[in-house]
Length: 180
Ligand code: SF4
Image (cartoon, rainbow, N blue to C red; front, side, top):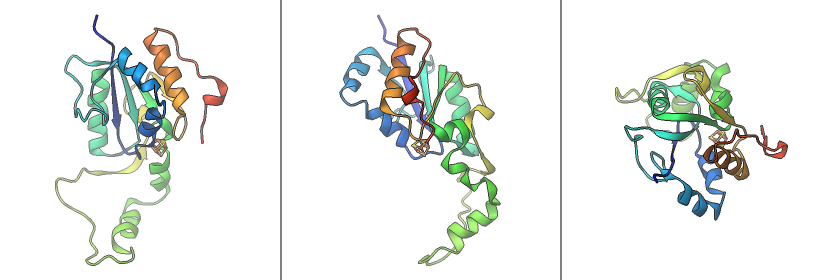
């Protein structure tokens, strides 16, 4: 019998949510016996299999055109898509720039920083187009579940994944519903 498949992906985030998933510690051994990991920084597979995956975990917000392209492709390939962490759910840390005009952010980061030899705003054509604002993932694609927290606790990942794999509706215990 083939195992269910899981993919994970990071957009504009810090990989802290992925690190928290790894904090399930020795239960990771149980998890890999239950599922097959597909696209993920953990496997270094860059795109989901064409036949798609059963569960996709998406970390991070949308700050540039490449994030949107990646999210749309990921959504197409995931039967169940879970927004993981504050950045994906509401914009989180990357969205702190939303009150400041993009030009002002770029000037501060690249032209006015200390110790920069030849200050210039990066403009290589291969760089993804920066968006005016940072957006949560649900503003672009349909999301099936959300796992709150920055990052969500490891036990919350375990609770959600075991419920989905057993065909149950996920329900996090109150202490696992973290919004900090
Ligand atoms: S929600 Fe927190 S831990 Fe997760 S990617 Fe964003 S900043 Fe990092």
